[in-house]
Image (cartoon, rainbow, N blue to C red):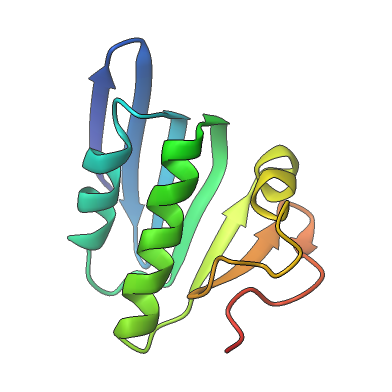
Length: 119
């Protein structure tokens, strides 16, 4: 059974749906909903994959939220699979050091080069 949640903040619409150990986010992540989304994701237990392949837009506030989530995962000793659209994958890889510790980045077409979850 899927559990879903939808949030409209300003003009951004974002939905979250859980299916088993995957939490899928669809829509837009910006300053108006990044905090809510981060709290929503942190509240989940037993999540192995965060599917952002349906995210059409991610602002710097969204990237900051993802960095914070990765740090939270590292503190718990967890590495999450982060499934991204090609556009979001490119955005998250702008830093050559792969600053998203706590995540293994996976592009839509399979594992992306490098391993952001490595310590």
